[in-house]
Length: 204
Image 1: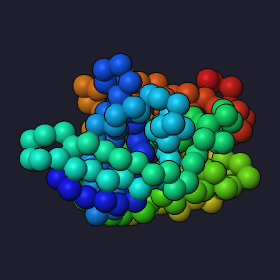
Image 2 (image 1 turned 90 degrees about the horizontal axis):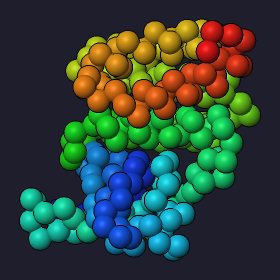
Image 3 (image 1 turned 90 degrees about the vertical axis):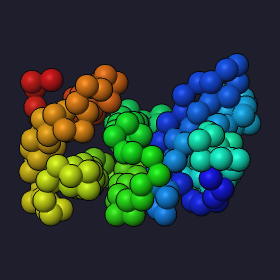
Image 4 (image 1 turned 45 degrees about the vertical axis):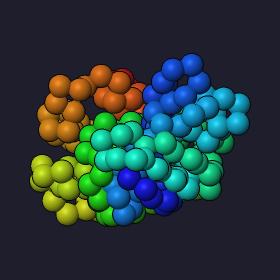
């Protein structure tokens, strides 16, 4: 694999003393993984953040070898990771995507939807401006991975979007995360709890 493309950084798993295995979502190639030397070092630590937009260059000698990755930061989501609600949303969307998408299968609609979701999270005045985009993204994930999902929904207001977010819990748990519940649904539950405060719910 030899490619260079804009990508959304999804996750970093420690490897050895200072390296990480990174996963990236690209428009043309889908989700790809690469070995990032020094990924836990001072220079790259601000780059390997979920949600960041990067230019990734991947090179390997064979399809069976994990490519080496070089990264250039294009847009940082770091400032929003200090705010509890945007941080919960960005971390959940990135973790869900990194967990459920197969590698090297292009999903251009998902790339576009996630790019729009991240922009909305970082630019909307509150979650009322982006929760609908989160539900649309989850719906597209279900649809593009073969579990229905239907057309992208439209919401009357925040409460309508919050109810739809709740309804997607079971399909995501049953279809997308079967056998891998773990940290991803914990991240979703954290996001739901923070959204519930806006919705005025007291059951979380």
